[in-house]
Length: 93
Image (cartoon, rainbow, N blue to C red; front, side):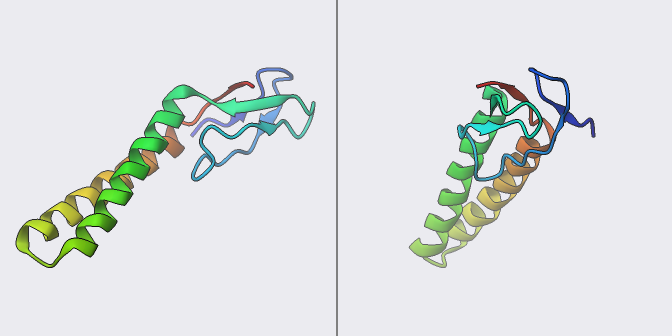
């Protein structure tokens, strides 16, 4: 997986988007503001929606339909979370 680089100074940046979508942060080298790209943010927000759907289905009951919704939402959540990490990118904040 390619390393992220600061668009200001081109130095490597370690950034984990999980749980930090839309949050601005600083480059550890030049201290300029960065943020995750819109693709990373959309994947993270969609993953959060799948997570809440999974929790909702768990709370609503133990019917066969609720189990399928739970399993499906869990799979989508894991996929979107993984994608938000794999395709993560940073841009000027």
